[in-house]
Length: 293
Image (cartoon, rainbow, N blue to C red):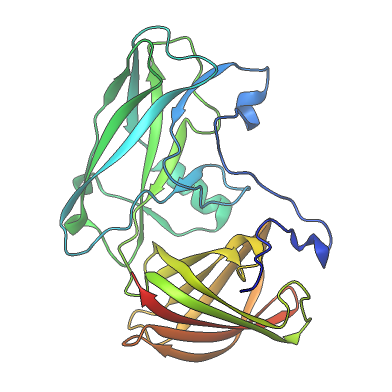
């Protein structure tokens, strides 16, 4: 099996790239200014899927089954940092489509804020004294979704009963709720780097089993790690009738320009697709063969 260089930067072959970190318990960005010890924020329940230039963090808490008209997602607000909450803290919540507009403007995005009929969320929750988080149940009415759009819920901590500040990084976040694509599943992945700039780290060709494709938009699938070799991800946009791939997105340190050279095969019945594409001068041929859920 090919040794996956998941943490190697593309700086090996090109100029140094900006890098990013996943959110964890460390206080970063605006929250670090002035050495703030504790903040109140939305808890990270999945990996951040937005770029480092995004004004708001985007998460995909769940991929929705179109056959299930209603689902409840458990989100959390938390008292983050060094201490637990010193006393009961009421956290008031709201949904603000304006942050979706700001995200779309910044990222040239196409996110669609869910209509009010498509969700139910409490207006406030309480983080109990001595505890660190409070549950926020979000009920989604999937039958009210426009499944041709990238449906999101823009969540805001609007105020609290505490003097502890609201996080500058995660006081407002965007939850994305894609409807499951037929291509979601586990695959045997094979890559050939046989035209353009030959990448020594890819090594010409290799195959890896158990590679996951996850739905991140309307018929858009995400694979972790660019070419299963570098940090970041690649995303494949299938057309509505699953007969072709219309675009490929590549991210490693930052968004990378891509060109589809040839869609070799898209077999929706057998869940096989193969595509030749170029990024950063490297020509690659990727083949995905589905092996399970």
